[in-house]
Length: 339
Image (cartoon, helix red, strand yellow):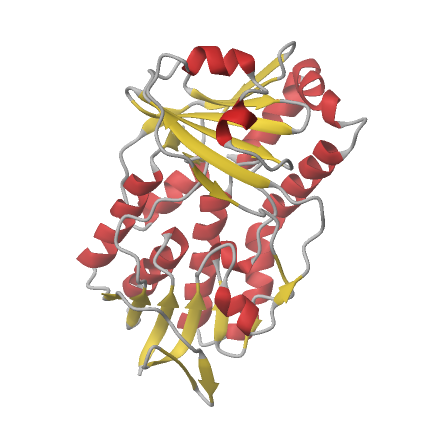
């Protein structure tokens, strides 16, 4: 019987496995998909996520991100990350995943290419795919089957939001993540290579990528010269869990619950949750994980929930960028909190 079995080999799952191996625990990962796994995401890492990756011994190649810029066609607000935190990083999801997988392999973590199947808890062990472990970390994504089967899923509030992402082969025109605000959608522009930018659109409306991007004609013109890549989608974004612990099963990453990609903290939150989970497993105190996860995610939950509520409010939504431009010190403080 091993110490920790991780279901899901994405960033959250691999971060759990790396942390567990570094803590001297016997760990294995179940992931049927081959490396690297691509998915729809903004691909911008906040400075805190960059530091957390380095603490795990993970280095991923990308483009430095100096801050955040909001635009709505009439107003612009810009804030740099604090000097104390250093820059963020624009990095392809596939590059990040490959770097995490390489680090896990270097530590001798076995990644078994088979599905988890039925998760069974009995006494002091939990079993999946024929492997018995003292604990199981469910890192199986936004629509976590483990969360659903264990009855931890709870209804998500409306309106539902969806994300679409595509890359364009154009030279980045900024070292900031640009967030272009529209009437009912945002477009996130992240530099991820010398001649490559990622474009992610978040919206409550269903529709194809070209239809969504057409709401931002200035971006359509700017991206017209670049060859577009394939489109990937995700959603609904909001996923809620009644709790993060069920016996010896602990939820981490998107499986632990997700609010929205508005603030770009998904990876940072996954890494913080993974560190908390490993510490609770190491100390044999799974009952402390819920509170540890809440502490680690509190700032993210407060900031993202507040911004999302403003986004959905008909009077507040059109004032978000003008307010950020009018009160730059407040905007810098918010960006510093995200960093």
